[in-house]
Length: 213
Image (cartoon, rainbow, N blue to C red):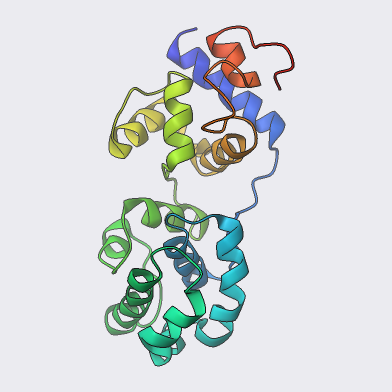
């Protein structure tokens, strides 16, 4: 298949498998989503969702988060990886939201990426999932699957994102990036698929072994 044909087939197959795309991180507004995404770095969404109810109860908005202070935030999230750095980032970004944005989460990539602990991927998730702006956040699942499905040979996240944005219609980006993540977790894991085992890899790259999903 040519890349355009691959992309079209992948999009249709993922839409069939995942007609709805719930946001994996529990949140109630743009701020709590931003916090949850910051916390999700090098952690599973499941673990983040276990931690955030207690955190949001005490620090559910920027003012409350600043009042908590770094030591208390760290205590509430200490089970997560990189907890010391994340604690400082959450208090720091909350301070900046109050000082520069009236306590509101900004709705531009540039302003989001100025916040402590917020990189392009985090900003992309917030823009897509909180504000509905077309974006294509690239995590490890998407990076791996884009290569396996020959949709991108990019070694950098930036290149993979650029390739995928060219491969798929902009109107599909926000749902599609979640669908790829779901599929990567359930069917095309790092160890569970060798690039030919799962249904999509088998279709695109060759016949699947017996018993493959």
